[in-house]
Image (cartoon, rainbow, N blue to C red; front, side, top):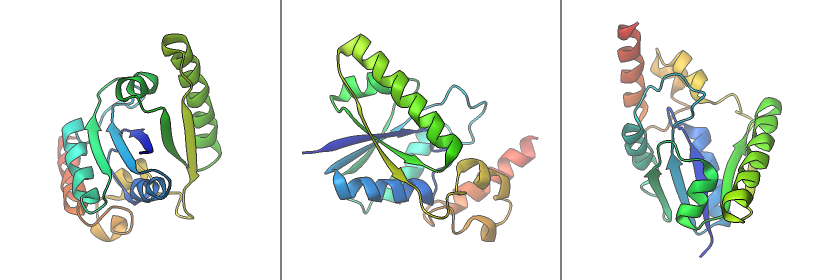
Length: 170
């Protein structure tokens, strides 16, 4: 059985993420989504368990996909823990590509150092709607019509409610 890890923060989960999962399923029998925390992000809208639950609502009709929370574990440690040395990533454009290349190089360096293993990174280029991203959704989530094509319908109300909650905190 061919397996792949799809790590990310997914805050919030959006249609771009869903497209990447569907692409990965064309190649792999099992896609394991790893919900983690990026130390470069200052504050999350949803905690990791909430993010896991939101993703599960969106993928429940896709066979061979599961979601795991793995707070602050580096990719090479996740690969070793699950004995899966394939990582699937989506690339949106210039800056993202540079970041992904750096991530791959550092991850493989650390994996070889710690476990003597090489990790295969598989990339997909996201669709023409490559502006879809969590930061755009957070910015425009004040109205349903702004994000209804960006966020899976299964979770749009949770995202809209979280926007209101965050605005009330500020």
